[in-house]
Length: 203
Image (cartoon, rainbow, N blue to C red; front, side, top):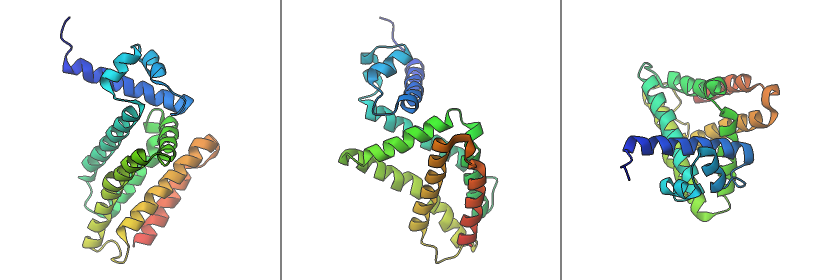
């Protein structure tokens, strides 16, 4: 049997994650099976398990990869900004424009929020999601807020962790409403108002 290259394995791994995300959005995480994912990816159930230990492992790997990609892209964009204020605005702009720049954005919202809720039922998943939230989501934003406080842009009395938690809760709420209400919901308008409120509070 010819040896499969690492490049081929990575492409197949990415294909599986992309197809799984589509199915999770269409059918729901709970109702989607490994058989479904294999069928959509054109491979057997056993082959899916060659790349991922479980459906949970598949989702968590995809989530972490998407988060790392988004934050890496933001860090690159941040290089052209000299203030924390501008970084907050850019962060919000990326999420505000995701509805048109990210394929399947509504699906991604559905999947992430469903898994977030689902994880609350299982201790091992809850711990994974708590670590993800604390070490990636909160940490990323806290660094920006602390930079702004150090530079004198933001008030020193702002409690960084509490604010960062509320920031992501606000974004999750906007995304949740958009996923349910769809085009009738003023997604961009809510993000623009959130930006004004956030900057007013920080300053």
